[in-house]
Length: 375
Ligand code: SF4
Image (cartoon, rainbow, N blue to C red; front, side, top):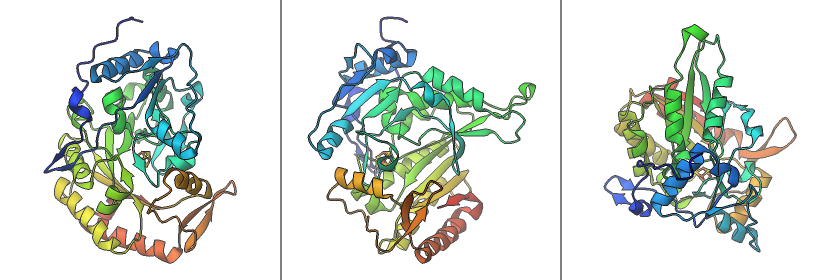
């Protein structure tokens, strides 16, 4: 491996970290981590060196570790550790265990990971229940191995392209200015079209974001094989509960740009909450999407109601002690999984009302076939 960092002129300019407000909404402030660690193994990777070049160009200082263990964060309370972790980026290699992919129904056939952790501060964060330990953001430097491994999971002989989800444990666009990983991934999938000579149906990629700086993605050779989804919610939810993300106007503008760049797009409406006035608020979101991308666009909807587990509730209350998020167990129904654990979901009547309304209102604007699932 070359000792000098690979120059990467696509890295954004240094004033990137300022939050921009235009007539098109309030963009997310791009993350500038206070502490960055590079493991020795990550430094050996071609993509690790590309990340280093981006950090150099952005003026982000990093520490090269002699080995592959991250230092302890310290922090005398969970909240303090949380704050430190959320300011820390680790450039590491995905462990070998991650090359054994797992299915992710109903979203995709398989999931793989470009990173674990996220710089945003959503007070209902899905990661609170699924990742353990301090929420340091780890980005993976062994991208060549991760993307090479995808080929092993394409199912020959199938009629439909094998689908892959890349955002189960992170928000890839929130890290793109530091890594370039989702751009590389989109281009890789652009090359994974059907191949009759090997009986391969090809592969498709899906990922989702609450960030809005899609500029680096607009000229990629994506070949329509990547569905870019934006996570949306009622305006007040994005402002009050989704710290560090782009506002609703900026996200819808990002969706419009992605559509214009020829990507199939999607909306993940989540977490849906029946707060007072929810019908008007969600109708407003759907109207704005329809205005931005048109009603006959190649667009899908994933509709996910709010839920929490006893474990995620505790973690979230430690992280966000003053949250306005409704985490009351009263008025919720326990839904058990096959391992005996449970989550708290809305009561059947409430869930039924939400589902009926969503199918009608999304259906009226975009056709019911655009809805992939409601849960
Ligand atoms: Fe968590 Fe997703 Fe919000 Fe990031 S964007 S904090 S992963 S819910």
